[in-house]
Every structure is written in C-alpha cells, then in structure tokens.
Figure 1 (spheres, rainbow, N blue to C red):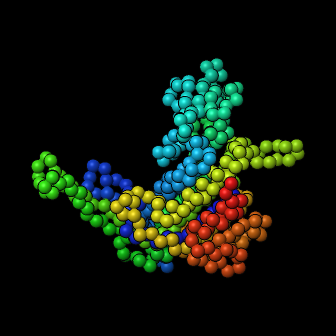
Figure 2: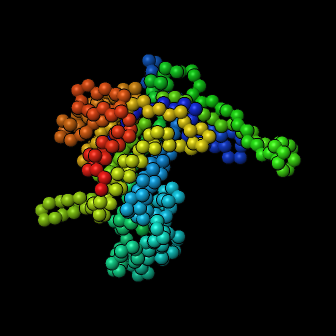
Amino acid sequence: MYVRISGRLRLNAHSLNAQGGGGTNYIEITKTKVTVKTDNGWAVVEVPAITGNMLKHWHFVGFVDYFRTTPYGANLTERALRYNGTRFEPIEKKTRWEIPKAGNQAVIFEKDSNDKKWYLTSAPNFSGNREEASETHFIKYFADADVHGFLAPAMGIRRVSLVKTSFIIPTEDFIKEVEGERLITAIKHNRVDVNEKGAISSGNDTAQMLFSREYATGLYGFSIVLDLGLVGIPQSAPVKAEGKKFKPNLVIDPKERNARIESALRALLPMLSGYIGANLARSFPAFKLEEFIAIASEEPIPALVHGFYEDYVEASKSIIKNAEKLGFEVKTFTYGVKLEGIEATEVSSVEELVAKLLNENGGKE
C-alpha cells in the first residue's frame, strides 16, 4: 500500500521544535524561510517550523509502540525500544559485530579476513550456514530498519526510509493574511527549588532560575508519504523471477508484513493529534486538524501538493484526476475538504481514515 497525505492543522502556543539556547536562558523556536507569491511579486519570509526530522521521529515512536505489541515485536533493534533510530556502524577495524535485538537476542555479523566481506553468522532461527551480509538480513530481523530505513557504511548497505515527512510550516495564505503580525512570542518561566520551610533564599541549598522560551501560533501545512508497498521487500532486489513472471521479492512472513504495515498506519494516530515535537509536558500544543486529503493505492503514486500552498486542494485534485487517467487505481479520502469531480470518501477524523486504510490493507491478522 502506498499512501499520500497532505493537509492543514492549527497550532496555538506551541514550542514543538527548538534550537539554540545552549548555555543561555533563552530557548529559540526553530525557524526557516519560505517563498510566498504576493500581488507585488515574490517575498521571502522567515517563519516558525517543525522539521521533517522531528515529524519522522514521532512516527518512528508510534510505529515502535504499536509493533512491539504484535506477535513479532522481538524483531526490533534494542535501540528502537529506547526510541532511538536505527544505527548500523561497527567500530572501525572490528571483525565481529553484534547487534542487540528486542527480547535479549542478537544478530551477529563477522568480517572475513580473506575477502574482507561481512557475513551473517548468527541470528534467531539461523540455518547455521554463513551468508554474505545484505539488505535482506536487516529487513528480516529489524522491522524498524525495514520501515524507517538504515545506513551501514562499512558494509556498503543502505535502505531509504519508507516514511517521508516534510517540514510543517505556516500556510501561504495565512502568512499573507496576517502580514505584520508576530507569529512568535517569548514567555518567561521560573524554575524554583525551595527548602523544607517552602522558602526561596540565596543560599546554596536553594535556587531560582529564570528563562524564556519562544512559542508560535498559526495555520500550518503538512505532507506525508508512506511507501508501505515496499515493506519486507529489498530495494536492492525488489522483484524475483518465477518462470516467465516477476513477483515482489518478499523476504518476511506475509503475516508479519501485514503487522508492520498496520503499525506504520496506526502511528499516524498520535502524530496527527499533537505528538509531533518537543516540550509536550509543559506546552502540549493547542492542536486542531483542520483538513486533509489522503490517497492510497497498491502501486506507487504521485505525492500530493504540500498543504502550505494556497491552492493545494485544486492542485492535488488535478494530480488525482490525471493519475486515474493514466490507469492508477486510487482510493481518495477527505476531511474538511470538497473535491468536486473526484470520487472520494469523506471521513470524520484521522482515526476513521486509519481504520479505512487498515481495511484496505486487509484487516488485522
């Protein structure tokens, strides 16, 4: 299944992505520059932003949370259980590389001193015959590497993430309508340490720290791409020949593949309800999903236009229409948006969207 989602959300009083502040008492919100088309031509504007890196991290967190509850939850790296992204890089000059898995297991690669190649020598349910290290091994034993990609430079093996996220940025029309208004404000906070009498003094036993943190508000656009049709399939060898026909080169059990796809879809739920950044404990965003367009297909399909753009609905509608003319079978879903001339299913929430996508995928095993 290939899924594309673009839309808009309203964020008030958020500090979801900070930068700087190290060694100071002032924490800045992340900013970037965007181009906006105005009546007087093009303008470059600095705006608050939530990076694609931040958004992807929170999808990773959701994926791990859902997948580890499935019967295949041991097929994660140990790092994933701490919400750390996949990292495969053996120590320089090392000849034996042990990668911890969830469930107190490990996958072991060893470097041959003669041909200088890496080989899989031990893993759960391993046959015992060493195999030259490949993308297949990482996909098979590590669901987080399969869905969110990895890089193992020493082995010359990599996999592009199946989850691709854009920056979340204020929308083009919103920027123009509020021109001159400040989208970012700084608020002063106070952290105190009191003694047993409840007093704050200047002694060494108590402390008071003043600091400021920036917060932003606005109507934001987003875009997400999920290439879940490649779950369990090596990008280096996506098809295999069976007689005169070519079929997807699936290297994991179909039931586990379904569990990985479902977990990746369910991970959209916390993401699109506010779990998309930092500083959640003290300023969980005043978050409201305003609208979105989602499309799904069993074959690769074009991405939709980012929700940043003023005309993203019309532009995305043209993409869907033209894709259908080219023979793509596309399921379209909308929330808060009307797509005239397109057969689309209106959903009442992101939860309903995910439920329908799960149904398209074949339901829960």
